[in-house]
Length: 90
Image 1 (cartoon, one colour):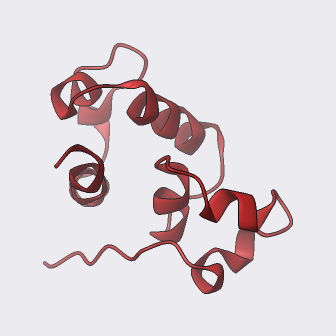
Image 2 (cartoon, helix red, strand yellow; image 1 turned 60 degrees about the vertical axis):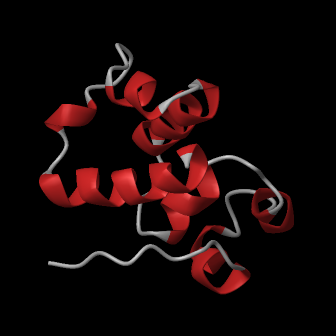
């Protein structure tokens, strides 16, 4: 199975436009717009994942987080996250 990660754009974030300032989100250097653009729900889990990634200094630090068990996620979600994380840590 191949997973394609999309860049956050107005079009693929439009469904969330009532929840926050879309133009501000698109200017964000953080991972939240990437998660939302790639099918993650705007919920506590997604915001926690975004916070962990934004505060971490390495990919290993993210996967080893004590705040969230990334290894408990389904393989498809882990694959998507890994591709998104590569954007931030490579």
